[in-house]
Length: 104
Image 1: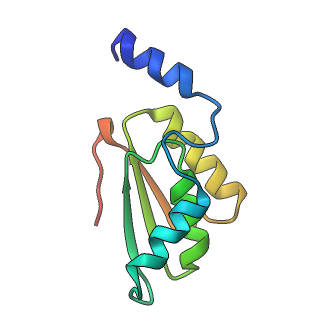
Image 2 (image 1 turned 45 degrees about the vertical axis):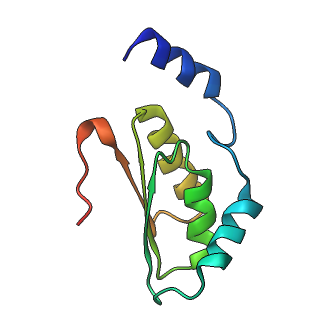
Image 3 (image 1 turned 60 degrees about the vertical axis):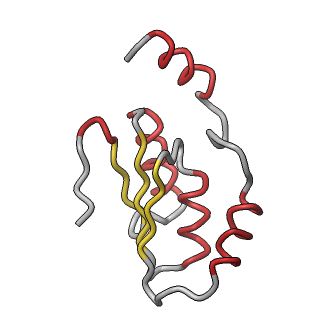
């Protein structure tokens, strides 16, 4: 990791989300998509700490499978902890991109 990357991650540490938007914006985007399969599979690339990942998991219900991918291990670890704490671990998978991901 470069100093620049480390500084960026340090600035974002502890924030509720690592990008623009909100839960409301995520849910509106989902609404605009229209109907989905009964057990949709969603890939959230650059998920950060997974705020949108978890919002989608709650909105899509127990049949959904959402995979969050990020470069920064601590963000992926936080997503894992928060998904588990919110009872979403059965429908949320995480992957730290630098370690390779199996999306099968």
